[in-house]
Length: 132
Length: 397
Image 1 (cartoon, rainbow over the protein chains, first blue to last red):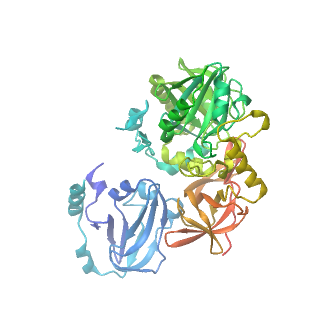
Image 2: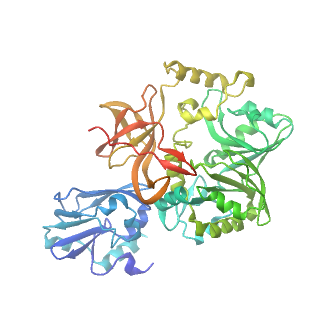
Image 3: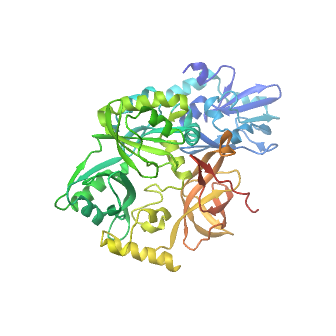
């Protein structure tokens, strides 16, 4: 697997293995390739309500795999503007395409300054390398 | 040190995600994942390497009588080429294991047990061994493969040298595939109406598996790992030792035990008989003394999750808890066959108060949520060569 697939450049990362991609006023959030690989086959995603308020590194949703349940944390404080409802019937999209069609939520109204608390791809990959 | 089945290297080089399971290195799934493998098995078919399971050869003039004294089902009902579900009970009517007994020849049987109980079962059988019986552990001499699902018959018919065993559950016979001698049985652990298990020499197993995989691919028959093996058995309402059966729980608490326990008076005594009769009597009387809780199928009726250990309540009153449970995929049927769309639904087996009624509306507590659910008879029903998911109406709010 290429490094680019593991942690694409241009995204922001948390140490809890969420990624953030800025798209205009929205922040798209998903799970990293490392996270989906660790979880194994994902069978259910409990998505947040649209318009729910989340806090940076507060619980945002739950991902269930064959093995376990994992809390997903909000990488940024903000409001849930959109959820990926395709995951309701096809949670395996997270395993198949975690940086694309397997995205989780889009946040609005977030604080740009909080991006400073996140890592870039290089720092995230280094963190994973230390953990392995 | 974990053991390897004869298919281990194939799994490792074909995308198998290998995990340790009951002392064996086995794939939990392959590239497409548990959901895809479950759905493929229901629509076309699945290949399972189940060589980790324990296989004991029992032979000799006293084989039948000895098995009849130690197993809950009556091997006297078998003939060569037939198999039966059975249990190994202790004197207290608690299970050492659940098992399948295959009669291959007049004085020759194979007893297949759970991998996790292999050592314990073998010791128990050896301790109770009688004359005129030859007991041998063939677990690493014979490999065991399962071919399950609607197109499994077409696949095997194209590869086997001899005709398939006669139609009908639990029928079997000797056969050959690519020159390899094997025993083929219409049995399995997926609930599929069309299903087969193959017993064959350990050293030939990988080549046979590869033939099955290559010939199965165009039919949509795919290799399936432990993850979907578990969701398939759960959707079919089949018990797993350590979950539904436990060494401290009455055997008759599991409803499918009745298919593996023969209390016919003409059969004579066997290990655990008196205790099992008391359990059966408790259930029949409606007093439930010996069996205060038993296993029921519980279907979730809304989006949500359930897992082993989740508490089950009715109107806030605790009924018991799940012994198995997870999200299970199902095909949307188009007429009498699976269509193109699938959905996921939470299903479980639960140990509940024995007086719980079929159709009872329940709540299943999982993490922060209470999922509405219902006690049901079954999650699936056979429909021709398919196993059709039964759909349940939405729960009462």
